[in-house]
Amino acid sequence: MFKNVIVKTPGKSYVNGLTTSDLGKPDYGRLLEQHAAYIEALKACGVEVTHLAESEEYPDSTFVEDAAVVTPEFAIITNPGAESRNGEKEEIEAVLKNFYSKFHYITPPGTLDGGDVLQVDKHFYVGISERTNREGAEQFKNIAETEGYTATIVELQEFFHLKTGIAYLGDNTIAAAGEFLDHPDFAEYEKVEIPDADEYSANCIKVNDFVIIPKGFEETKRKLAERGLETIELEMSEFQKHDGGLSCLSLRF
Ligand code: CIR
Image (cartoon, helix red, strand yellow):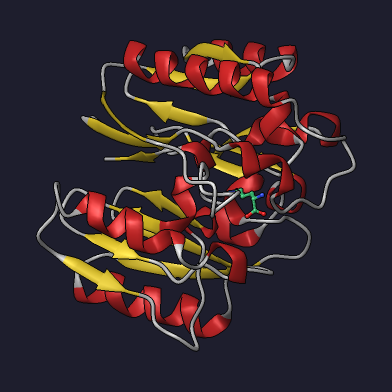
């Protein structure tokens, strides 16, 4: 069970942040509404929300997931791969000091974004992406192993981050899209298969008794319901415009 989450309000500078999408400029008012709804959904899942104020100097810093990886026993402060985001790790580390006494760090020349790390119980999958390099992934694997976890390094072919295309739903089940549908590293799992047209909904989060999914993906909702999973749907349009999904907006522990 997750007890805590950390979220951060997006600042006005969000609209000038990084993106590879061509979905248009985010509307700041709608963005704030969607972020507020995200917080309410998390509260409905029974977690305590630590809510950080916006910081204009880091346009992408609402995506708190990328600056740290958190487990029940320790936190790993990452070394985010985008230069404009790298300094975000300092605030996140300071906040996590309220919850953790044990820290590990990804250090240069290693880079790693938390969005490239998927945890399945005592195992991690670590994606090598535009943001996470092999050195960062190897450092992560070593840290995991010293802590009694195991890790598999996965080279991404197309997805932006590992968790852009995959989520763990408990009970040996994953939601998988695109390159992860037939990927040998995930062959052992039961799969909720997400077709290309619904790819965005592969980035969903299981928080205690609910799976939070983006709004507008009826097929994904139906497939989750078939497995007895209760969903909460959230409008995510303004985050999607900047390559963000549900997992990116919180640290859950
Ligand atoms: C970025 O390019 O870094 C942000 N615009 C989006 C980050 C999304 N984070 C994630 O998938 N973990």
